[in-house]
Length: 144
View (cartoon, rainbow, N blue to C red):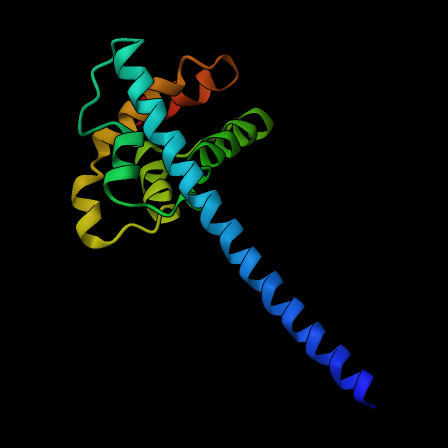
């Protein structure tokens, strides 16, 4: 019986350690994504000589402290729209895409003040460089 109690205690400690490791893993992921976003911005400014302004999505994601787990939501929204356009010929309006992005990022009312429609416009124009989603970006921008 004593061995059984010892085993149960060991299992409990192991489960606590696993929970702690999972929490640290999630924290590491979030910090890594934020660091990658900041490094990407820095590289765009220094190496590519890009002018980063308040309408740049990457800048705003960092400024507004958007959850790093949501970073991939934006390209996914545009990719889904491109897939739907290829299948059905239908595409969302500019304002529908903007609202989808704002919603996916879970922005507060205050954050929405900084996340203007110009941010979405700038993003779509940047994505027009990608051949497979160029047509959908062009169509969406035409509805503005």
